[in-house]
Image 1 (spheres, helix red, strand yellow):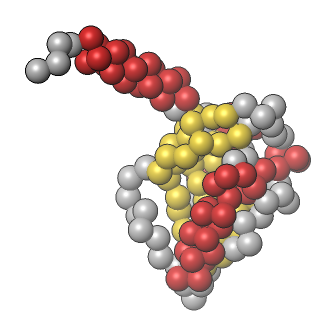
Image 2 (cartoon, helix red, strand yellow; image 1 turned 180 degrees about the vertical axis):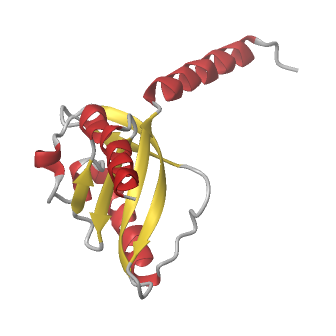
Length: 145
């Protein structure tokens, strides 16, 4: 079993996806190499900081409302599938994120925080935006009935 724990830790630490764990108050407690690469903050810079570190200011109020509701209830409406949201890198640039959440509970079922597994989908998002614009341009050129 010791090998399995080591393999799991290596998986968490070295996954290309950003993997982070936050506590009930939304303080980052774990930040892997993928998060460092994707968002630009080292683990030393991120651990101990609020999730506001990479949440755009205009989305923070809505984020915290939902976050605290989940921490109180232990339930989320996002049990399956991926969530999408913009994020901010250390350099101030925006990144398009898709992520899943894992609710973390103690032995009694009390919420202790959550883990997020995030992927940078900025390139795909930009391509889709470009294709939508091309489609709109083509539709604008069609004769009106």
